[in-house]
Length: 226
Image (cartoon, rainbow, N blue to C red; front, side, top):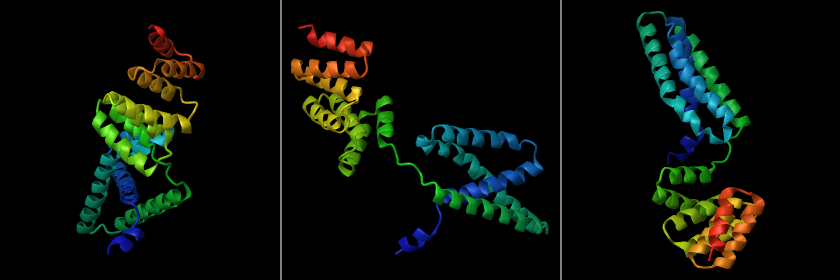
């Protein structure tokens, strides 16, 4: 029953940005130490601008924006009690303008799609194979043509010594992304674990053709050693 109402409300991040920046301006007018708060916010936004696809970096600024929002609310209440009410409309208007600008920019620049494969590989690099696999399986069900996710799914299957399943996932990934040297090299390893040396050697050679790295050369040497 609340969905129609929620659909009309702006994202909480918009108001956090509006109140946070207005509070930061208010803080800057009263305390020279405002740069201590502003610097991490600027760094978080700069990081997001450089690595736009990884827009989760914006969350690094969230605690400080929340702090500045608290400053804004506190100043509104304090100035109201002190009968300095002329400042309240100024900063309410400032917050409203920032919110409106944020909403406008958001409508003109839709956020990039979530790179679920990056998140899955982040779990893998942290050694959280189970979490990575569960997430990859869920995304693969929702996006069966997501090649990078299938690659990650194949890697997690191999990490669990489920080599048949790993080979199947990697074969599907390669059908979607035939020039992924990582997928070919991981499929070579899966085939090797299954004792399918001829197919493993073929996949390793493809990986080398796509990306002639010493690692892939060593893999081919290991496959051809017996």
